[in-house]
Length: 615
Image (cartoon, rainbow, N blue to C red; front, side, top):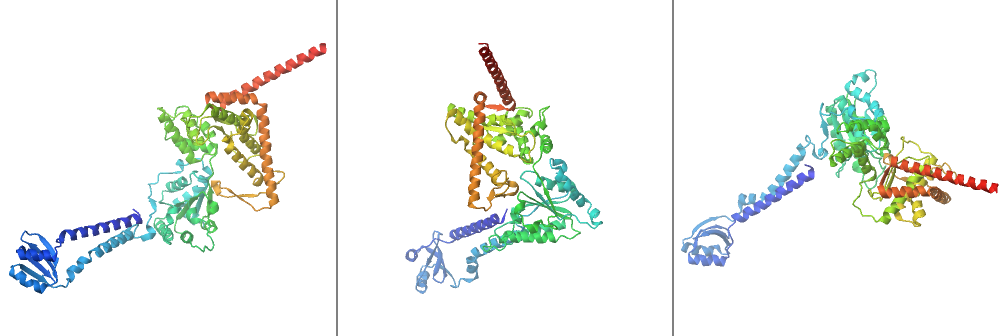
């Protein structure tokens, strides 16, 4: 229960106490009676006894009903009371201590609630107060079962961290030679690559306590709370040394300082960062405490945090290659029932760019798909369906699409696929579908045979041509333009812009970068570099020229292979989805038919020439 919940609970209890007190007063206070009614009942002899306190009268009638009233003339009332033989008791008009304490009951209730709230806060987290409102998570020795055997696909990072485990187990091995183990290790890389899992594996391998906390857990609305939590965390860690402190998403508190923020809006975060820097400098040689942090945005971290002596070692965890994806698949496949003979290497080859988290999700989705179809084990088609769902989105088979739109989509996707097949420097077509998935009415998926780390000029230009293929096919066959190619044109424009402004591949503009990539491993956007108006106009001309040349090249290719365009579109209208093998069959049948037609044409022309010469 956090501070706000406890405070609300205390307020609720106080309110209930006040309500209860008011109910008690109402139930114990006799009903009021007018003085005239009192005199009338007294004259009738119905008043049995009264109690006088100054002018205030409480009493009981002959029917034993209590009442209260007020007399403006008590001395004049006394003869009447004596004449009617009314039993009279009296007290001073001074309220006394009893009435004082009675009036103080609401104050006492509020004060008690406040004391209970403070007591709860002071005892929470071993007497912490605001600074320890969120306690860290400690895994005692033997609880963390995650080891390097549970981590796959990042062997280089594991090898880099092996000596960290060794130093936690045998610190004297390094200290006797005068060396010291790294104080901090920064794990940086794209989301889902296993940074958190790797940190837990270090603790599991070394069998040491593991403190885990998120960077955002340090930041609160109260200035100074984050710094207090940092000091608490390191104090507790030193008591449990040797141990590991893991801070996930450290960029939440470790971002670059503003250097003079007039508004003071970042005071809390900067104080927290300062406390972290001081604590990391405060490690003594006999305290084996290692700080492990993870981030997707290393470019945002403050330089003071990254200097040697704080984060001595920075380990980059990249997306796994084909071998790494296979090993990750094998780890997660142990948790599901696989069909005999299933080839995980084929699956690993077909998912380039997948992170470890995405591969784990793929295996889980395949198992759910198999269970949904009532199968006893997970088969290759289940993996294919799960992959399509992750990459292309959920199939919207219930969407009603007119035959006109289906035909338009079929030719659009066929245009993409044909250009990707005819050109050489491209990724092979993996699947073509006109079944709506996600926001798209159809999709053409290409998968590289090998992991790509650099891209040639020819590959990039051919990629733009492939994107233009859908719009060109629509224009050639239907003679009109639609909005179906909007995303293709947007992507093509972005590629052409980066080709010229970032990669320096345009001969006119030259090898000059006019854009600077921002955003670390998240991909981010690109910020424009200042340049002259003449350069801006030249860039605009070259971008337009590149897109127009690719569009014309796509038009020429589809015009030359017009029959293949019709054949593939008709096949899509019948089957709705065509895979790589079926695409290869259609293409080779077209090539064979084309050779036969060319041979017949050549023979016919030769015969006509021979006849003409004979004449």
